[in-house]
Amino acid sequence: MRIAHLITRLILGGAQENTVLTCEDLLRIYGDDVLLITGPPLGPEGSLMDRVERNRVPVEVLPALRREIHPLRDSQSYFQIKQAIARFRPDVVHTHSGKAGLLGRVAAHALRVPAIVHTVHGAPFHAYQGRGAQAVLRRCERYAAGRCDALVSVADAMTEMLVAAHVAPRDKFTTVYSGMEVEPFLEADQYRQATRRQLGYADEHVVVGKIARLFHLKGHEFVVRAAQQVIKSQPNVRFLFVGDGILSQSIRDQVRRNGLDRYFQFTGLVPPEQIPAVIGAMDVVVHTSLREGLARVLPQALIAGKPAISYDVDGAREVIINGETGFLLPPECIDELAAAIVTLAADPAMRARLGAEGRRRFTEQFRHQHMTQQLRGLYERILSSKRRP
Image (cartoon, one colour):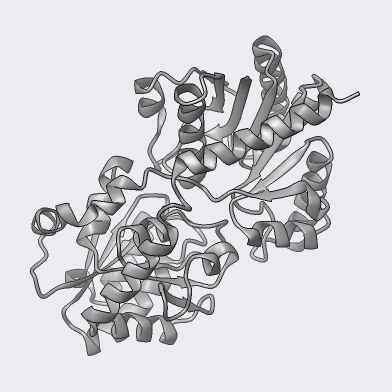
């Protein structure tokens, strides 16, 4: 097949890693002709461009394609996308993310590409937007959904949300969990002692980690607030924030104002290949985002044998089973979050039991080869249906 994948930018993020792994698998396992179309990887979140080039994934960078809404530049993006697709002449166009998803589907439909697929990594409209913005984005998604053959959800929760918003009928959706390289996470504890020494942790420290961009709605402020209660009960707990973003300074200021400097550490950006070692150094993973399709860090933590605590948003409940693989909590809660951290910090046997169950349940489900096999099967079914008289 000739398959074009389209994403707004190749920063360090779950949707981006998903897309790159899919392209690599299609090239290596299936021998397909692949083109990855993207905008410049602007922003403080880091870039996956080095990996793409190192693994020889054909890529075309469109200068005008950006995340921010800009009518003139977005018009230029549309024509650049259309030209790139027309030159490549794909059998399949598979889009990701909001901007590239909208423009790419419309362009591919106009060019009569045989199969058009879009992955919903996270709904573009959510409760933390104004009503006007939500209404506009719902209409845009409905319009774009009418110009593709299938919608892929990274969690069942995404399907439920978009069906409820009348974006598309249920039979247009397929759930394909976002795959990853699971072996490094299975081996994460091999690096535990060395990484903990490097980060300055002693054996008695219980490390609670959060891996996320320091960005709006990622919920770092809730962890800082809960930490004040946790430290009073379990002074051996330490908090590790992995990632960077525009809120870095304000979150550091919040930690300082609360007198928690000695309990918090910020790593800044960490290359994706080092994330398994960092998770290996942790004892508990927390995820307090207020919106997320299905955060990759949750299955990553579980596959590494670490229990996870998450707010009950979007697809989190599909991997965090209360009392079995971790704790699922109401969004924005503080007292419950602190209590869950204290419970796990005080009970190493529970941490081991929950982590082991998470590993048993989800290792095979999140292998990237399984994800790509499902996606390629979807492409084949769409193309086969189009060839019928």
